[in-house]
Amino acid sequence: MLALHPEYVINEHQETTAVLLPFQEWQQLLEAFEELEDIHAYDEAKAQNLQFIPFDQAIHEIERGS
Image 1 (cartoon, one colour):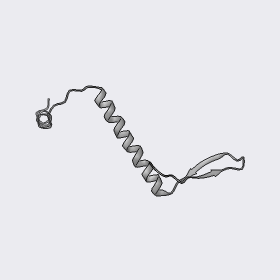
Image 2 (cartoon, rainbow, N blue to C red):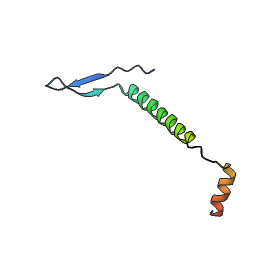
Image 3 (cartoon, helix red, strand yellow):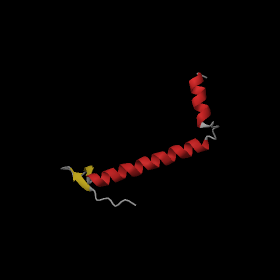
Image 4 (cartoon, rainbow, N blue to C red):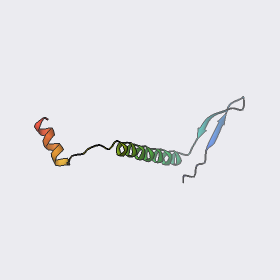
């Protein structure tokens, strides 16, 4: 689990308007988000039950133009 240390920017009306994170924590957060996106894409592809062909066959068909 990520340990975040946010700092909040508050305006003159005492409303939170922004959040500041140390750069390293921001990078870790982005990496975690990207990993979740990859997992989601994998789950979606897996749920579609697509038919796959071997890599060599795909290259051959691409080179053949079909």
